[in-house]
Amino acid sequence: MTVNGSFFPGRGTIVEQKFLEGKAEGLPQGEVRAWSDAVLRLLDGRRVFISRADSRRIIECTDLNVLRHWFDLAITAATGEELFAGAEVTEQPYLLRGEDDGEAKGRAMGRAMGRAMGRAMGRATALLRVLAARGVPVSEAAVQRIRDCTHLSTLDLWLNHVITVNSADELFTAPATTG
Image 1 (spheres, rainbow, N blue to C red):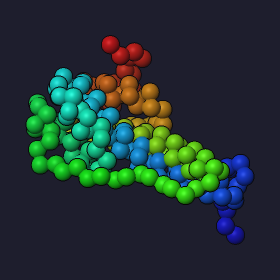
Image 2: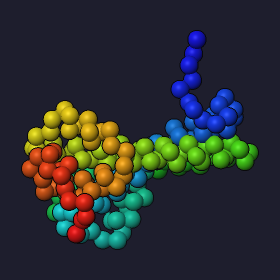
Image 3: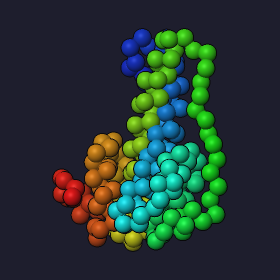
Image 4: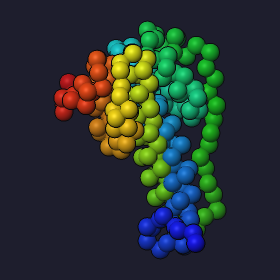
């Protein structure tokens, strides 16, 4: 007996199918957005100023490997030139055609959910990468807490403080407001 773990209203319908397909598509889109946001936030937090064109290049990049590479470089880069050394950006279009209204709505809902999940996953991974790069000790419980967090505002708060903390516990006790 197969158990469907979905609690989607109208379970088993074409709308649910498109919702799940959209969710699967939205996840990588959200992760791309999370990584581009993380690169820009890290540069801003480190007071590394880049040109508007460089900022646009980061925002428009759809290649997760390139964004992750830029993020790793942003931890220590002093300029935009250092950040972009040797990276090629690829295009990943996310266009779908030929769906009726219900299918399109289901896909759009799923895509939005997938994007949100992808952003959370991307931000959590970015946090862990900065902590590791800085040599900050992180317990398994802290790793799990970061990975389990789905509140983008909490992850953003932690991202704002990750470059200054000396322990994961300090990260979790960061002030509720950012200056």
